[in-house]
Image (spheres, rainbow over the protein chains, first blue to last red):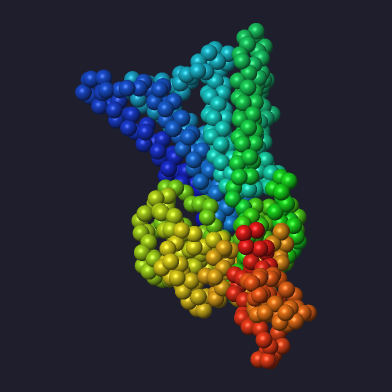
Length: 253
Length: 286
């Protein structure tokens, strides 16, 4: 069952989510190419809007898939621990894949030719606050991870709606990602920091300062990561309470 | 052979204590009827055994090991309930294939037979199935999987009379061919009365009766006749309920009757399982 559960989970993510996002990018690239060849403006959305649209649709789909997989695994007798582990590992993979797809799309769209850093959208003002392009790229990546985490949380919560689960297990499952994902990222940054030279260490320190809205050279940015963390925590907490209330209404006996 | 041992299970939903203290053992190769009135916690109990809900107290073991989040144990169970746990976009055929992969094997030949006799469209999406066909789909899963303990929570929900008869007949035929443990939680007591071998009656959060169905029914009788004669006859027996119809009294009793009752002036009938259930769990319209 172990192998099958992994197979089922990733297969659904690939077939129904990543392929879906890839298909949408493909569609918009085709329109882009047709527009380039024919010379008439067929495009309804610019490259940045396409990226945003695909991202939002993909996130919503991910929430539905997470909910369905959570309940399906319970029917199949898969232990909650493994289900939880699989769901949260997909946060990382989904972030990498979507980030990669968007970067690729931005690079090959005929009128685009823009690096990922230019796909800033509402985060445009933050770009100036970071010294190095990679810092802003990493910042965007973290934003991706947070957004995807929000959708996974919702999916997991609604999955648990059907299970009348123990509240400790549910709480652990719902908030597990807040420990795992930041833990992994902090571990990776810590490893780089430990081995880096003095200049790089200064850059990393400056980057980390900016993540929490502080700057060594007087530039101040809104501490977006912290704000988002709080928003996600509140959102999932409210959803969890909502879930608990609904559970009590499920037919018993 | 393995047994599922349920020990002192308690379950509380907020302030409502659904299961007070439930203990029983499920033996291999038996058909159990799990009976109880609405809201007594039959579904909750099945959900706890199948790792979908957690007990506040107590323990459920298979081969001496807890079944909670225990994959080795859970893959020997299958719970069919009214809650839909299958992905909406999945087709019936795909679901059969995934079940086969998850559980290692699947009785494809029997599956083919059941799909044909129930006339189930395997190319239909699960989400598009009607209530009756959704039930049929889940029943087919339950009967074709290689599990040792099959829990059926309201297994004939939405099925017409013909399909219900077909299901009971298929259940008995597959049970005869490959004995395994079935636990059927249902309110349609008359329909399962001839199928169940062992009865578990849940009332007020505890197991009120846990015994062989034949033994139980052999001890359950309706004694009717003139009030005085009935009173004299039932003296010393456990009277579950009395009904009066003018001068005639009907007493529902539990206990071994004398071997020779030819000389008595009362009529004696064996109680049906449904009558016994009503007597044990409260009055009609309670």
